[in-house]
Image 1 (tube, rainbow, N blue to C red):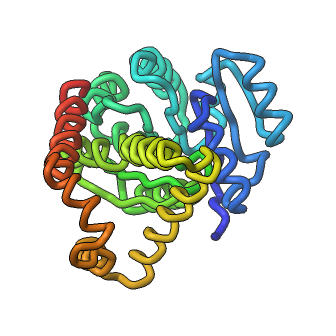
Image 2: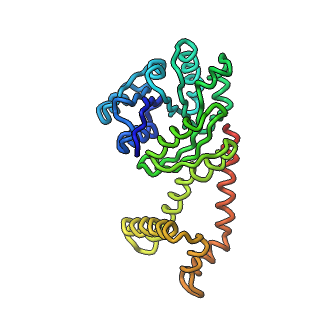
Image 3: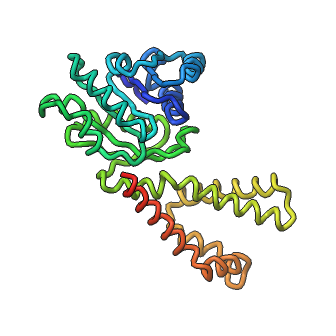
Length: 282
């Protein structure tokens, strides 16, 4: 991966913020000296500085003035305050273009623009392009899946920079913002669905007399192998499922129970419920 010759600042140094820092450094995309982090928790910042040798501050205005790209990694309830601070910092300095990347769930671009752009003319708005991102927790192990959408001021270079950063912690697909609720429901919440299935399978194995550790190993390796088979063959999931399902066999017995309970319909319903809740939160 090529180096990103930009200074990057993270407002909010929680787990996802650390995942991004780790990905940037481990991939060679950024040097520690190019990365800044701010947080209200001084002890957390010192921990990150000791681990990654990055720059730290508890002053968001200072961070904003020192970097080219600002990643907002704070909880949605703190976004208003953070954005107001950044808007004030921008209006009082000749700071050039600042790419704003938000990974705050349920906080739409229009709402960000309403705060960041409230005192700006069109030319100045173009200096604060915004990219909204919906990542997921596997980013913590550099295996994330994210959807992103830029606002009307985000140029192709801005989108490419956001894409490059996100690829340091996994994969990313660009969407229209209206699709991010579906992205949230499918991949943002998706790990919880998978963990739920794993939890159930391990419980089933233990109930049949296997040790919990063996049941976990069997389940995890089966899931990893199935995903690899799906990716490497390029076959449709339904096709591969049918190849495993012999007439009158064990797999057919299991699937008949799932189908009689309408499991597929319930999964579709669950994802739709998550998407609807995402719309409500926005």
